[in-house]
Amino acid sequence: MEILYGVVGEGMGHATRSAVVLEHLLSQGHEIKVVVSGKAHDFLKSRFSGKAGFAIEEIHGITLKYFGNKVDKAGSLFWNLMNSPKGVRKNVEVYRKVAEQGFRPRLVISDFESWAALYGLNQGIPVVSVDNIQAVNRLRHKKEIRRGNGFDYRVARLAVKVKVPRAYHYLVTSFFYPPVRKKFTTLVPPILRSEVLAAVREPKNHVVVYSRAIGEKELLAILRKLPFEFRVYGAAKERQVDNVSFRAFSNEGFLEDLRTARAVIAGGGFSLMSEAVSLGVPMLSIPIEGQFEQDLNARYLEQLGYGAWTRKLSERAVRSFLERTDEFSKGLSQYKRQDNQMLFDCLDELTQSVSRDKKRPVRLDTQCMGSYDKH
Image 1 (cartoon, one colour):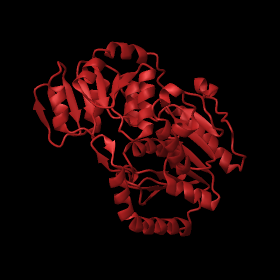
Image 2: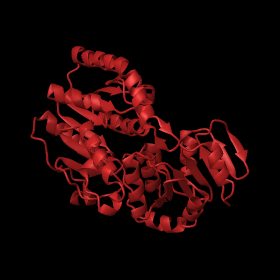
Image 3: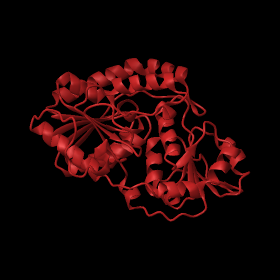
Image 4: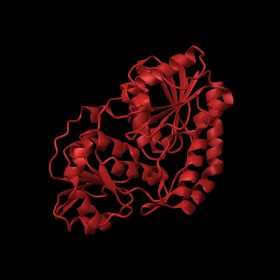
């Protein structure tokens, strides 16, 4: 089957998760054309270059700007308005190219990417959504999870709803399992890289830190006061200052340190959080202010006993968190770690349904649904 696959370019989590799905689809003999923006384009192009059945086109996507640990709404709006005319021209060109080059997709898959989803709607092609952010709109969240976020929650739900509207089916990846509130929605476990699935938990005493929104000087001022070894990833320059080691980002090095860490301190992004939960590593989350989805992730992390969250990083917050890592490790021991097979089976069921022109399923019938089936 020919499949158009859209990947949002804001952040690399969508790209790394989509790479797992793309590997599976290609292994099943599907022909894939990917449309993607930002750094994710270079990552996926490099990862799949030369593979049979794979093609990629770069499109223009929305870019968010940040001021500290907060979304810079004015800066983001200005940047995107300044670049929108060029971006629109580019996207129209890619639209024409996809439509005129003889590529006739029977299915569109979108990882929170609007261009491909709209292409599918305009062409009458079924769209399957595969991402975690749809949890904001398609799951029912208790008041304590939404506390203090009433307006932000309503705005976030609307934004998520219009991002990939009227899909054939929504596969929502999640490590938390509230009830589904919408039809044509299936909860599946988080998508995990093969390296993460192969990793074995061997806890030691160091603490991994990864947060692009917090400056190195601010981090150092807090961490050097605490009696723990910290390994800070994403540093501009590698160096050792007292108990704090600043390291350039490395996939292999980061994962090795993560699987053996006492704990991890990071933002509220779903990819790293789901990897930490899967590996059983307690996490302190500092969600970016103004991103409700990150708030949601962090609140569920704390509610489930897998870690804690704080609005602002401080010596007190870090100390309090690290004093409770045994408690969080016990909570994480109750989490049932799963691989990607459930997602793959759901995708296979959906591709077969589309290929046979079946009516879109309200619920999926794949045999591996397990405990998720109750949702």
